[in-house]
Image 1 (cartoon, one colour):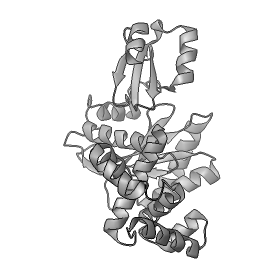
Image 2 (cartoon, helix red, strand yellow):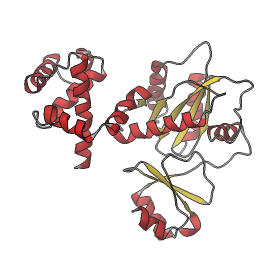
Image 3 (cartoon, rainbow, N blue to C red):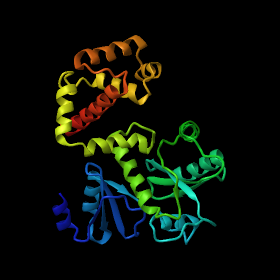
Length: 302
Protein backbone atom coordinates (compact mmCIF):
# COMPACT_ATOMS: atom_id res chain seq x y z
CA UNK A 1 0.00 0.00 0.00
CA UNK A 2 2.82 2.42 0.88
CA UNK A 3 4.35 2.15 -2.60
CA UNK A 4 0.98 2.87 -4.22
CA UNK A 5 0.47 5.93 -2.03
CA UNK A 6 3.94 7.25 -2.90
CA UNK A 7 3.08 6.87 -6.58
CA UNK A 8 -0.14 8.85 -6.12
CA UNK A 9 1.29 11.45 -3.73
CA UNK A 10 5.05 12.02 -4.30
CA UNK A 11 5.50 14.30 -1.25
CA UNK A 12 3.85 11.87 1.19
CA UNK A 13 5.64 11.54 4.52
CA UNK A 14 5.04 8.38 6.61
CA UNK A 15 5.64 8.72 10.35
CA UNK A 16 5.72 6.23 13.23
CA UNK A 17 4.57 8.93 15.68
CA UNK A 18 1.62 11.30 15.53
CA UNK A 19 2.82 14.77 14.49
CA UNK A 20 2.12 17.35 17.17
CA UNK A 21 1.58 20.13 14.67
CA UNK A 22 1.35 20.46 10.91
CA UNK A 23 1.10 23.23 8.30
CA UNK A 24 -2.31 24.33 7.05
CA UNK A 25 -1.49 23.16 3.53
CA UNK A 26 -1.02 19.54 4.67
CA UNK A 27 -3.41 16.66 5.37
CA UNK A 28 -2.69 14.25 8.24
CA UNK A 29 -4.19 10.73 8.18
CA UNK A 30 -3.84 7.96 10.77
CA UNK A 31 -3.44 4.41 9.41
CA UNK A 32 -4.87 2.51 12.37
CA UNK A 33 -3.90 -1.08 11.47
CA UNK A 34 -0.20 -0.12 11.26
CA UNK A 35 -0.44 2.71 13.82
CA UNK A 36 1.36 5.09 11.46
CA UNK A 37 0.58 8.60 10.21
CA UNK A 38 0.92 10.08 6.76
CA UNK A 39 1.23 13.74 5.81
CA UNK A 40 0.22 14.73 2.27
CA UNK A 41 0.40 18.10 0.53
CA UNK A 42 -3.16 19.30 -0.15
CA UNK A 43 -2.19 20.43 -3.67
CA UNK A 44 -1.62 16.78 -4.62
CA UNK A 45 -5.05 15.61 -3.46
CA UNK A 46 -8.14 15.99 -5.63
CA UNK A 47 -11.63 16.16 -4.13
CA UNK A 48 -12.27 12.57 -5.20
CA UNK A 49 -8.97 11.35 -3.71
CA UNK A 50 -9.68 13.21 -0.48
CA UNK A 51 -13.09 11.52 -0.18
CA UNK A 52 -11.41 8.14 -0.70
CA UNK A 53 -8.68 8.87 1.88
CA UNK A 54 -11.24 9.97 4.46
CA UNK A 55 -13.22 6.77 3.93
CA UNK A 56 -10.10 4.61 4.43
CA UNK A 57 -8.18 6.49 7.11
CA UNK A 58 -8.85 8.74 10.08
CA UNK A 59 -8.06 12.38 9.33
CA UNK A 60 -6.27 14.33 12.06
CA UNK A 61 -7.08 18.04 11.86
CA UNK A 62 -4.50 20.30 13.52
CA UNK A 63 -5.64 23.37 15.40
CA UNK A 64 -4.58 26.67 13.83
CA UNK A 65 -1.77 28.71 15.44
CA UNK A 66 -2.80 31.41 17.91
CA UNK A 67 -0.15 34.11 17.46
CA UNK A 68 2.53 32.88 19.81
CA UNK A 69 0.09 32.23 22.65
CA UNK A 70 0.95 30.13 25.70
CA UNK A 71 -0.56 27.15 23.85
CA UNK A 72 1.86 27.60 20.97
CA UNK A 73 4.77 27.88 23.38
CA UNK A 74 3.82 24.60 25.05
CA UNK A 75 3.42 22.89 21.67
CA UNK A 76 6.84 24.16 20.60
CA UNK A 77 8.31 22.83 23.84
CA UNK A 78 6.72 19.42 23.29
CA UNK A 79 8.18 19.45 19.78
CA UNK A 80 11.61 20.28 21.22
CA UNK A 81 11.80 23.51 19.21
CA UNK A 82 11.25 25.95 22.06
CA UNK A 83 12.00 26.49 25.77
CA UNK A 84 9.64 25.40 28.52
CA UNK A 85 7.11 28.21 29.18
CA UNK A 86 7.68 28.18 32.95
CA UNK A 87 9.51 30.69 35.10
CA UNK A 88 11.81 28.01 36.46
CA UNK A 89 12.74 24.40 35.74
CA UNK A 90 10.35 21.90 37.24
CA UNK A 91 8.95 18.39 37.00
CA UNK A 92 5.82 18.15 34.88
CA UNK A 93 3.66 15.42 33.46
CA UNK A 94 1.37 15.27 30.46
CA UNK A 95 -2.17 13.92 30.71
CA UNK A 96 -3.25 13.16 27.14
CA UNK A 97 -6.89 13.42 26.08
CA UNK A 98 -8.41 11.78 23.01
CA UNK A 99 -11.98 12.45 21.85
CA UNK A 100 -14.26 12.39 18.87
CA UNK A 101 -14.62 15.69 17.07
CA UNK A 102 -17.88 17.43 17.95
CA UNK A 103 -19.34 20.93 18.00
CA UNK A 104 -18.67 22.93 21.13
CA UNK A 105 -16.20 20.44 22.58
CA UNK A 106 -13.34 22.93 22.97
CA UNK A 107 -15.48 25.41 24.92
CA UNK A 108 -17.06 22.71 27.10
CA UNK A 109 -13.73 21.03 27.82
CA UNK A 110 -12.12 24.33 28.82
CA UNK A 111 -15.04 25.03 31.13
CA UNK A 112 -14.87 21.54 32.65
CA UNK A 113 -11.11 21.72 33.29
CA UNK A 114 -11.44 25.15 34.87
CA UNK A 115 -14.31 24.03 37.09
CA UNK A 116 -12.67 20.79 38.20
CA UNK A 117 -8.97 21.68 38.46
CA UNK A 118 -9.05 25.52 38.82
CA UNK A 119 -5.62 26.73 37.60
CA UNK A 120 -3.70 23.62 38.62
CA UNK A 121 -3.65 22.12 35.10
CA UNK A 122 -3.01 23.83 31.76
CA UNK A 123 -5.22 22.66 28.86
CA UNK A 124 -3.62 22.69 25.40
CA UNK A 125 -5.42 21.57 22.23
CA UNK A 126 -3.20 19.64 19.83
CA UNK A 127 -5.77 18.81 17.14
CA UNK A 128 -9.51 18.41 16.69
CA UNK A 129 -9.21 14.97 18.32
CA UNK A 130 -6.46 15.46 20.88
CA UNK A 131 -5.51 17.74 23.77
CA UNK A 132 -3.16 17.60 26.74
CA UNK A 133 -3.36 18.65 30.36
CA UNK A 134 -0.03 19.84 31.78
CA UNK A 135 0.48 19.35 35.52
CA UNK A 136 3.42 20.88 37.35
CA UNK A 137 4.63 18.94 40.37
CA UNK A 138 3.48 20.61 43.59
CA UNK A 139 2.46 19.82 47.15
CA UNK A 140 -0.69 18.10 45.81
CA UNK A 141 -0.45 15.57 43.02
CA UNK A 142 -3.73 14.65 41.35
CA UNK A 143 -4.53 10.98 41.75
CA UNK A 144 -5.94 8.34 39.45
CA UNK A 145 -9.25 8.70 41.31
CA UNK A 146 -9.23 12.46 40.67
CA UNK A 147 -8.93 11.90 36.94
CA UNK A 148 -11.48 9.09 37.04
CA UNK A 149 -13.98 11.44 38.71
CA UNK A 150 -13.17 14.08 36.09
CA UNK A 151 -13.98 11.61 33.28
CA UNK A 152 -17.31 10.80 34.97
CA UNK A 153 -18.09 14.52 35.33
CA UNK A 154 -17.34 15.10 31.64
CA UNK A 155 -19.84 12.42 30.67
CA UNK A 156 -22.58 13.32 33.15
CA UNK A 157 -22.38 17.11 33.17
CA UNK A 158 -20.97 17.97 29.73
CA UNK A 159 -21.92 14.83 27.74
CA UNK A 160 -18.34 14.49 26.54
CA UNK A 161 -16.74 11.09 26.03
CA UNK A 162 -12.99 11.41 26.53
CA UNK A 163 -10.21 8.84 26.84
CA UNK A 164 -7.11 9.69 28.82
CA UNK A 165 -3.48 8.69 29.31
CA UNK A 166 -1.88 9.71 32.62
CA UNK A 167 1.82 10.28 32.07
CA UNK A 168 4.74 10.20 34.49
CA UNK A 169 6.49 13.25 35.92
CA UNK A 170 9.67 14.19 34.09
CA UNK A 171 12.12 17.04 34.52
CA UNK A 172 11.91 19.93 32.07
CA UNK A 173 15.73 20.14 32.26
CA UNK A 174 16.17 16.73 30.64
CA UNK A 175 15.02 16.25 27.01
CA UNK A 176 11.24 16.16 27.40
CA UNK A 177 10.01 15.69 23.85
CA UNK A 178 11.22 12.03 23.51
CA UNK A 179 9.54 11.24 26.85
CA UNK A 180 6.25 12.79 25.66
CA UNK A 181 6.36 11.11 22.24
CA UNK A 182 6.97 7.71 23.84
CA UNK A 183 3.94 8.18 26.09
CA UNK A 184 1.95 9.28 23.04
CA UNK A 185 2.97 6.05 21.31
CA UNK A 186 1.88 3.99 24.34
CA UNK A 187 -1.46 5.81 24.43
CA UNK A 188 -2.23 5.08 20.78
CA UNK A 189 -1.08 1.51 21.28
CA UNK A 190 -3.55 1.15 24.15
CA UNK A 191 -6.35 2.70 22.11
CA UNK A 192 -5.69 0.37 19.18
CA UNK A 193 -5.47 -2.76 21.35
CA UNK A 194 -8.24 -2.08 23.87
CA UNK A 195 -10.48 0.83 22.95
CA UNK A 196 -12.94 0.17 25.80
CA UNK A 197 -10.69 1.67 28.49
CA UNK A 198 -11.26 5.25 29.63
CA UNK A 199 -7.94 5.80 31.40
CA UNK A 200 -4.58 4.43 30.26
CA UNK A 201 -1.22 4.45 32.01
CA UNK A 202 2.23 3.02 31.33
CA UNK A 203 1.31 0.11 33.60
CA UNK A 204 -1.83 -0.64 31.58
CA UNK A 205 -0.19 -0.42 28.17
CA UNK A 206 3.04 -2.20 29.12
CA UNK A 207 1.59 -5.73 28.65
CA UNK A 208 0.74 -4.89 25.01
CA UNK A 209 4.35 -3.92 24.36
CA UNK A 210 5.49 -7.07 26.13
CA UNK A 211 3.34 -9.26 23.86
CA UNK A 212 4.55 -7.42 20.75
CA UNK A 213 8.17 -8.12 21.66
CA UNK A 214 7.57 -11.72 22.71
CA UNK A 215 9.12 -14.28 20.38
CA UNK A 216 6.84 -16.36 18.19
CA UNK A 217 8.26 -19.47 19.87
CA UNK A 218 7.09 -18.21 23.27
CA UNK A 219 3.66 -17.28 21.91
CA UNK A 220 3.31 -20.72 20.36
CA UNK A 221 4.13 -22.35 23.69
CA UNK A 222 1.36 -20.34 25.40
CA UNK A 223 -1.08 -21.25 22.64
CA UNK A 224 -0.24 -24.94 23.07
CA UNK A 225 -0.31 -24.98 26.89
CA UNK A 226 -3.24 -22.63 27.51
CA UNK A 227 -5.29 -21.53 24.51
CA UNK A 228 -5.64 -24.81 22.65
CA UNK A 229 -6.70 -26.86 25.72
CA UNK A 230 -9.53 -24.39 26.46
CA UNK A 231 -10.30 -24.10 22.72
CA UNK A 232 -9.86 -20.32 22.79
CA UNK A 233 -12.84 -19.94 25.14
CA UNK A 234 -13.06 -16.12 25.19
CA UNK A 235 -15.45 -16.12 28.14
CA UNK A 236 -12.91 -17.95 30.30
CA UNK A 237 -10.09 -15.76 29.02
CA UNK A 238 -12.00 -12.56 29.76
CA UNK A 239 -12.69 -13.86 33.25
CA UNK A 240 -9.06 -14.61 34.10
CA UNK A 241 -7.94 -11.34 32.48
CA UNK A 242 -10.31 -9.21 34.58
CA UNK A 243 -9.47 -11.21 37.72
CA UNK A 244 -5.82 -10.31 37.18
CA UNK A 245 -6.53 -6.66 36.32
CA UNK A 246 -8.70 -6.28 39.42
CA UNK A 247 -5.93 -7.45 41.72
CA UNK A 248 -7.44 -10.93 42.38
CA UNK A 249 -10.56 -9.30 43.86
CA UNK A 250 -13.38 -11.76 43.21
CA UNK A 251 -16.20 -9.39 44.23
CA UNK A 252 -15.08 -6.58 41.92
CA UNK A 253 -14.47 -9.00 39.04
CA UNK A 254 -17.87 -10.66 39.41
CA UNK A 255 -19.55 -7.25 39.47
CA UNK A 256 -17.69 -6.12 36.36
CA UNK A 257 -18.64 -9.33 34.55
CA UNK A 258 -22.26 -9.02 35.74
CA UNK A 259 -22.21 -12.56 37.14
CA UNK A 260 -22.72 -14.12 40.56
CA UNK A 261 -19.57 -14.67 42.61
CA UNK A 262 -20.20 -18.45 42.45
CA UNK A 263 -20.23 -18.24 38.64
CA UNK A 264 -16.87 -16.52 38.75
CA UNK A 265 -15.43 -19.21 41.02
CA UNK A 266 -16.81 -21.91 38.70
CA UNK A 267 -15.07 -20.34 35.69
CA UNK A 268 -11.74 -19.99 37.51
CA UNK A 269 -11.94 -23.60 38.68
CA UNK A 270 -12.84 -24.78 35.18
CA UNK A 271 -9.85 -22.90 33.74
CA UNK A 272 -7.56 -24.54 36.31
CA UNK A 273 -9.00 -28.02 35.74
CA UNK A 274 -8.36 -27.83 31.99
CA UNK A 275 -4.98 -26.07 31.95
CA UNK A 276 -3.56 -27.04 35.32
CA UNK A 277 -2.86 -23.33 35.95
CA UNK A 278 -4.21 -21.56 39.03
CA UNK A 279 -4.90 -17.88 38.41
CA UNK A 280 -5.17 -17.33 42.18
CA UNK A 281 -1.35 -17.17 42.31
CA UNK A 282 0.64 -14.46 40.57
CA UNK A 283 2.77 -16.70 38.32
CA UNK A 284 -0.26 -18.58 37.00
CA UNK A 285 -2.26 -15.36 36.63
CA UNK A 286 0.57 -13.72 34.67
CA UNK A 287 0.78 -16.55 32.15
CA UNK A 288 -3.00 -16.63 31.83
CA UNK A 289 -3.15 -12.86 31.34
CA UNK A 290 -0.57 -13.05 28.56
CA UNK A 291 -2.58 -15.87 27.02
CA UNK A 292 -5.70 -13.68 26.97
CA UNK A 293 -3.81 -10.91 25.15
CA UNK A 294 -2.37 -13.35 22.60
CA UNK A 295 -5.85 -14.76 22.01
CA UNK A 296 -7.20 -11.26 21.34
CA UNK A 297 -4.29 -10.66 18.96
CA UNK A 298 -4.97 -13.93 17.13
CA UNK A 299 -8.66 -13.12 16.91
CA UNK A 300 -7.96 -9.68 15.44
CA UNK A 301 -5.70 -11.18 12.75
CA UNK A 302 -8.19 -13.86 11.72
